[in-house]
Each structure stands twice: as structure tokens, then as C-alpha cells.
Image 1 (cartoon, rainbow, N blue to C red):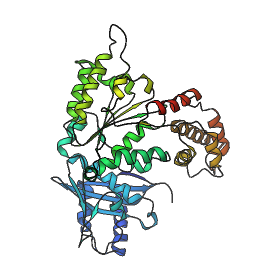
Image 2: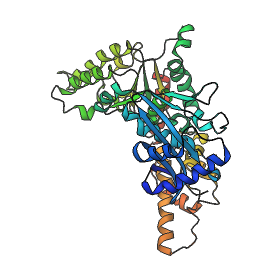
Image 3: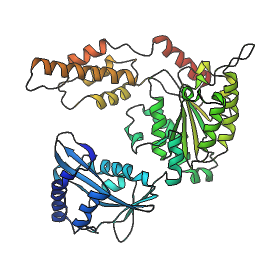
Image 4: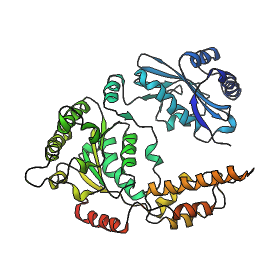
Length: 425
């Protein structure tokens, strides 16, 4: 089946909704909500559709009442099932409804309904007697304003599963960081104190930011990225801006706070007179202990240059773990290539691509893959190829040969030394 995409409902999609309704009623018991209710919600409430070209192949429709959200209708065309469309529709519908302050999202359907996988995959819980699903929305109305003012957001579900390869790093983060936080009561029974702050270090482009966002998605906590460069214009200076930002973060029930390139505000303190950044470093060192006392919080700092960090910054008691995120191994490179090779590409030697990109970061591989796709597109357009087959092995080989690896051999060697010197896992 051709590629599908999800968009908001348009008025001229009504025929597609009717066709989906006919399929549902022909295969299952009569839905809980009747057709007039479904069409009314399309027009005045919340609705998203999945389309292939101009054809509607799926729809999710919902309504809100106070803090309660209801899924009024969810359907996927019979020839489009098994592609994750239902789960994606539910995620998109929740994203449209969340700004209205819902704290619970529920669905009612007849007991004869058997297509419940999309709800289960999206975090709903099956109730008895009826197929009744409910899901508590992690960020509720009172937090949305604060989150918006901080420039934060709720990450889409599924980012953790979408991280391809990097199995060792992912497994370590799952066991050390995610599991104790996600199962805090069980961790407490075993005497495990969930982490409050971690450092991710490694060469540029290796996925540190991706992991930070994926952890927030996995925990279903708000994600707030602190940008030192943006805070520098604050009337109280960078130190004052940091203090005010973390005070506002304390108003959130749960939060993953991410500071990238933390060496900008936590560099080694040295020299007389003190450098302008020393006051900022001192302020951050005071903020972290107070942050650690608040439950439902995780600070993730990332750096490409861990040797530049102040010694006091990394000591025990401030950061629970100092975790290396290195260049992708062959398994990880395979997963990354599979993510960016389009279906139209044929006759590729994936193992050769993996071998040719040894020493490449995930960002390098993405760049080479997109460069090959662009070259193939231009060739198809300008040669008038009526039946293009997508990027060829030659396109990829050419793109790889002209892509400069972000991480030099020297930097890679220093990273291995840093693992032994400062890694704490």
C-alpha cells in the first residue's frame, strides 16, 4: 500500500467517513455512538484522518467535556490495517485534544468489537464488562500554561521504541534511569533511589539529544530544554535567568529538564580575576542540590567536551550517572540506514552501506542518506525517467564518499579515554 499520512479532518472528507462507517457496521456490532453523533463531532469537535493520496483510509474522532475526553469513532479501512495507522490516529487525536485540559481520555465500544490493539498500544487500559479504555493525560490543564511559558512540550509517545540500534546505550539507560523512575514504588521496596540527574557525554551527533527526548517520552513527563544562549539576555543575567527558570520548573508535577552543551555554563573555574562564567557555574552548582530534592524530576545534561567541565560539577551527589554515548556500532548503523532508505530503493547491499559508514555518527548517516535521495530525485526529474526506482547503490556510495565524518579519529580516541576517566554507570 502507498505511504499514508495523517492530517486534520476537512469538510469534504465526509464521504470517506461514511465509507469507514459502512465497513465498521458491516463487520462489527453497532458502534456506541451513532452516525449523526459521529458526523456532528467531525464538524464541531476534534477529528483527524489518515489519507493515501486523496483517499481517506482511517479516522479518529473525539469530543471533550470539562476534563474528560472521549473517542467517538476510530476506524481503519480493511485494506490498510496492520500498518500502525490506528495507533497514530489516536496519538494525533490526543495531541489535538490535550490543549483543552483533559485529564482522562476514554473510549466505549461494543463487547463484540475485537480490534482493540490500537488502544492498548497507545497506553489505554482495558476495563471489564465493556471494552472500556481510559488513559490519564500526563500533563493537565493547570500545567499547560507554565509548560508553554518555559518553552517546554510533551513528547510524542513511541520515541523510545523509535530509537534504532544503540542497543547497549539504550539498555543501560532503561535499567539505570527509566526503570527506577517509571516504577518508583517498586524501586523504593528494593531500596533503590531513582536518579535525579545524569550526564550524557560523547562526540557530536551521536544522539544525546535524541535519548533525552526519548526518556521524556518513555516516562510521559514534560520535556523542558534550557538554552543558555536564550537566557543570556535576561535582565538579571544568565545566573538570575537560570534561577528563575528552575523555580518555574518546580511548578510542574513531572519534568525532564535538558541542558545541551552544558560546558557553556559549567566550564572549569580558573584564573584571576574570575571569568564571567564563574558566577553562572556557581549558580548551577547551587541549583542542582535543590532540584534533586524534588520528586518527579530528572535533569539531563549533555556535553561534547566533558574535559571542559568543572571538576566540582561532576562529583558524586550532583549526578547519579555519567553515561557515554558513542558512535553507532554495526547493528545501530544498520537500524539507522533502514530508517532512511525509502521503499523505492532497490538492489541495495545494506551490509556494504554499514561497512562504508564505519566511524559515522547517526547525523552523518542521515545526511548521506538524504543526499543520495536528493541526487536520485534530481536525476529522475531531469532525465525524464518515467519509472524511477529510487536511490541506487551508486547514489549512496557517492553520497558517502563526499560526506565528511563529524568525529575524527583523535576525538574518537579521546572519547574512549574519557569513558575510563569519568564514566560512571
